Length: 488
Ligand SMILES: [Cu+2]
Image (cartoon, rainbow, N blue to C red):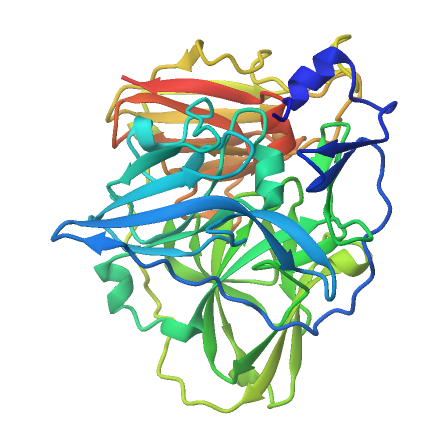
């Protein structure tokens, strides 16, 4: 059994004094110190992998049934070195769900891992019993059936582990995959489809000399890797035709924010956000993508001669973290796809529709009980499964205002990507100013920078019941930066 990080803190075994501790029999290393650099490997050599689409085990007129087994697997991520991962069906990323809006999906998840797990469909409108509440653990050897009505408009959702106190480690070990909802509005648009519609899961990781994963939640504040993985492949190259591609980009890192840009200087054409297509495409030179956020972009490679190489950069990354992957334009192809001027009609929620405003202040708070001496709190409190901090009524529109607390300079620059389960929201403003145009669509996760106040507006619809809101820096989340709300 793996002790939770908070339990270890209470026992006083974590902190600077602890150098190395094997976590769950020798599958990975947990270190409280700054670890050695990962083995150096050449970039842009390995081909991009695209996760396989999962097929249902059976289907009826209304429902598709799937089965997934969570298990350990030994894979080759760094050339010539074995890495133990935890994967859905032994894969990381897990297999991709591609489902239809309105068609019910039932997933039987079986846990063959040594630790209790929870599956959350991130961004979904899901009944509370299937939403993946952190305490609804599937024990080792057990299984649980999740029911997804798929009432969500077409969007790039994802599924990942959400186990209490262990979400960071479980995700780091590989428990994440795409869940793509499709509908007739998306079908009718002439956007790139099929092999030209490619999901890209971005993650940073750290490896020991023997290839095993190194999990280093420095001061329980952040896990920062020194290898960038795209769909589980370090710095891949992707051979493309000189035509348009749709990329569904997900930041699946524990704690790392990316700032995406093309090395060629070509702007990115943003067509969608967390919750689906924008009303109209937006051009932008770069995109800040925090943990759990998704952005859909179209890149037109017809601007480049055959033989061109275009690097997807991370403008926030130093050294080799400044590069993510490379597109090699290798062949000529006809292109009948287009980016239309209007994508999807979107209802704008206005302040006048809101019946109330709630305020949430994200910690840290100083404490003498932990090392480093901070607690990760929301409105001054760590998570308590029995405490409900907000009770919005079904159908109501509310404004939630987010800001960060700074305490004694501790975590003075700590940003928090805030994720609200069940609902999609729109960003009203950042410090009173409109958000970037590429953030103007439906969202379920919003970055709240340490020095900024962010207001979001949403309608509580779908289901009554208990859901959570939390920081999606998974280390903060595991330090109990979560709160319950109940839709009544
Ligand atoms: Cu946080």
